[in-house]
Length: 412
Ligand SMILES: Nc1ncnc2c1ncn2[C@@H]1O[C@H](COP(=O)(O)OP(=O)(O)OP(=O)(O)O)[C@@H](O)[C@H]1O
Ligand SMILES: [Mg+2]
Image 1 (cartoon, rainbow, N blue to C red):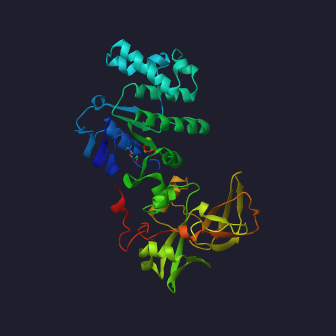
Image 2: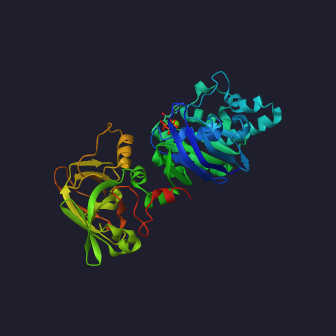
Image 3: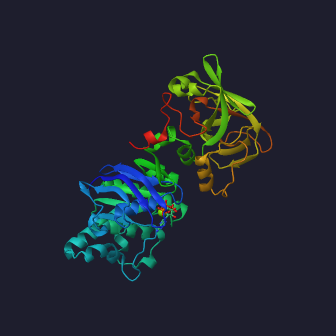
């Protein structure tokens, strides 16, 4: 086992595509780091450079003490697990798992021992003599994992290993990968474009956009303190609502205007984030998470953070999901349009150039709510949990004035 370190790594493909742009990451021994981001942001490229399957244009990759830029994939002592598990159809599960070891001409007894141990870890002991075609998708994925495990590598590199499985199996295998990785304590880099997978699996999560690392932090920190609009909108489901607002001074405090409505901003929040005072009298980008809103007509719908204020609108759409209601409504505040939000819209499947409609907001209500489609709705906002961003740069406004540059906190 070893740590894996990327230092100022670039990948510029021969056609000029800058797939990875100055990526620095230090993955600790035994850590599971998830690389997440929209399609095409450079995740696979980054992983393949660590694996030795792609030449590094600039910068260094080190595994343990050793810089591996010039070391062949074979000699890097890392095991890769891909989305397509590419098992040999004519070989048994046992031989599929043992394949890499046999290639290395390891003694038979040791191979048998390692395969038995991996099979036990993966719950494959009873299936060792079967052929891949007689396995379920999840079992096949486990065989692919087995091939990686038996090698006792310094690190696992996984590229969307669960994306071929159905939703239920993914959740199950996700838990399993988490357990196995913890049991074995092997340093792991796990690539996915699924932010839920990233949040549930990662000790830390690195969010990338267009080849550039945006933020790397434990999941809860990404959720609570996103460095910019991109991370804010990418982490969380349903996504954070992003609106253009205006912050006005009000005595010692502040009022946030969202179109023709207003929310009081709690004092505590202004004290906590003094940089906000620099935005008084100016436009500001505001983020409200769906889960920080509730039906104001419900008993006990107060904000958990101590601040609460009410918006009024009409429920355009109510999606009843059983445990919660997703209530769509419109505020007369414009959407935030920056490079970050354009990239988020693209990732969400919007057409090129399409911008989100005026102030569409989604709130997560308790199923006890009696909100009805087409009827007026009053939404209580937990104002202590509002997010603010610079409307031009998209940087999160957190600390002292002037320290809102996301690039400065992009790596830790
Ligand atoms: N061989 C190549 N030559 C030129 N450009 C490439 C090559 N391989 C990948 N790219 C480009 O590099 C960028 C990053 O690709 P990469 O496959 O690393 O993205 P990704 O984050 O893994 O995406 P996905 O989630 O779709 O797998 C993309 O713009 C892609 O088109
Ligand atoms: Mg990929």
